[in-house]
Each structure stands twice: as C-alpha cells, then as structure tokens.
Amino acid sequence: MSSRDLVLRRIRQALADVPPADADRSYETAVPRAYLREHGERDTDRTVGLLAENLADYRAVVHRCRPEEVAELVGRLLAERGTRQVLAPAGLPRALLARTDATVVADRPGLTPYELDTVDSVVTGCAVAVAETGTVVLDAGADQGGRRLTLVPDHHVCLVRVPEQVVGSVPQALERLDPTRPLTWISGPSATSDIELDRVEGVHGPRRLDVVLVES
Image (cartoon, rainbow, N blue to C red):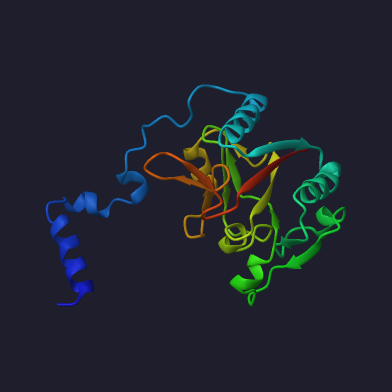
C-alpha cells in the first residue's frame, strides 16, 4: 500500500460516521462561524491608529505620509540604511524610487539567491494590513513580488494604502485574501529567541521593517 492509499484510507475511516447530508454540505456552511469578527467598535481613524500602535509594538518603524510624499520618504529611509542596491517588484511604480541614489534591481525569474543576497533593501506594497494584530499580509501581487524578495534582503519597506488596505481583524482580512495565493503574514522584523529568551533579529527575514502608511 502506498503512502497515498494509506492517507486516503484514514480519511475515509475518519468520515465513516458522518451523515450523508453533512458530507454534502459546503465548507462555508459546515464550519460554524459564530466567533467575534472584531473586538470592539472602531472608526477608521482608530483602526489605523491601532494598526500603527501594534506595528510599533512588534518593533516595526511606522511612518505616515501623503501619496505625493512617498518617493521622498522612501529615498530618505534607503539613505539612512546606506542602501546601495534596492529591489523593486515588477508592479511597483518606479516613480516611488525616483528620489533614491541606490541602484534599482528589477525582479526577474532568473534572479539567483546569491544576487538577492547582494541587495540591501526591498520596497513593496501589500495586500492587506490587520490592525488588531499589527500584521501586513503579502500575496505575491504585482507590487509585492515573490516571497523570496522579502525574506533575503536585510531591510524591507512596505507601503500600505490607508484606509483602503486596512482592516480591523484577521477574519476581515481573510475575506479579502485568495487562499490559493502564497500568503506571507508579517508582524514586525524577523526575530526569534532561544530557550533563554535572547532575542535575535534577521534570522529568517529582514532585520528592519519600515511600514509606510500612505494616507489617501
């Protein structure tokens, strides 16, 4: 018996006592969803404020600006990090990088891990941001690129459109996301700790995360 046959047999055994009517129900109706969709009631300003507060709590650096100020702010953030090469996903407007002296490296299918390792910073958009958890979610959209783009460079600048990309809770975020896409959930810069709780940053992702809330 193959591993596949073994797994399928166990699934059939687990479903043996499920009434046929339940087996025919869709996933959406079969799973109870009576949980709270959001903790408390907030207007847009308070939701965005909560997002900024929780991002900062996770040691992300939060900035706010108007759309016409993004290029200048991004240029300053890259200069502060001493960025020599900055990676840009294919769908990120190049005008957003017009105020940097760093060399712009375009994302391409043949970009090797060694080439990625020479890049100092990456600038991306996001799919959605969750206020209650201080999380930005990337789904490999055109302005975000593949997951590897935000895992190898040491510095990530993530642009969030406010308020249209901000939601209050994880259930609200899931409604906007396509589960078939590769989703990366980011809460602060990459960090881990050993058994003695010594925090180490930059182990499996960027050491610094700048989140720019672009207020339209």
